[in-house]
Image 1: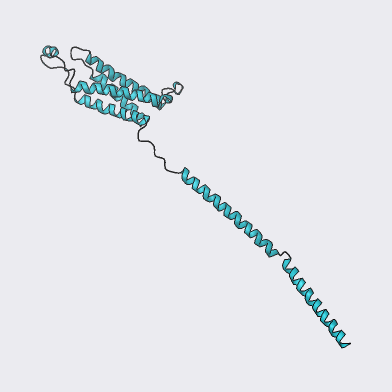
Image 2: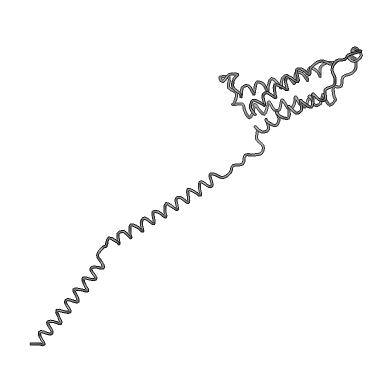
Length: 206
């Protein structure tokens, strides 16, 4: 009888131990709040990493876009500008090399002397007119769309064009007048006024 009771007690103990072990295994398999938090944290880390990658890509793209731009050394506008300045320099040199006009005594004899039509002054005058013409042509090519009649004479671009063209035309007229005259003729005033108009044209847009 005691043996049967002992066996029953042993069976009960085994059953109790088995139930305890099963309960522990089931407890391990149950979802916990901490597990959900860890999974959410991992997803958050992945999202954060994606944002960092995207941010790095955007930063790298911005670096490429913000690369320093170096304008070309020679452009049509720069050539026009240099030709205009060169015209003023040549006009000044032409004025400095001009022979004295007029006479105080024996004017008839002076007037009958042959003119120097191929001297330094004449060559510089022709070069000045040629460079002024080149400045006008390059200006029309590069800035043809800056002239608008509707803007009127008060527009700086219109003033630049009108003064530049008028100044170049006056210098060309002065050179042609002197070249076609058999005797010394006064032309310096017209040429100098034309040069001053070109200076004003450059000053307006400088």
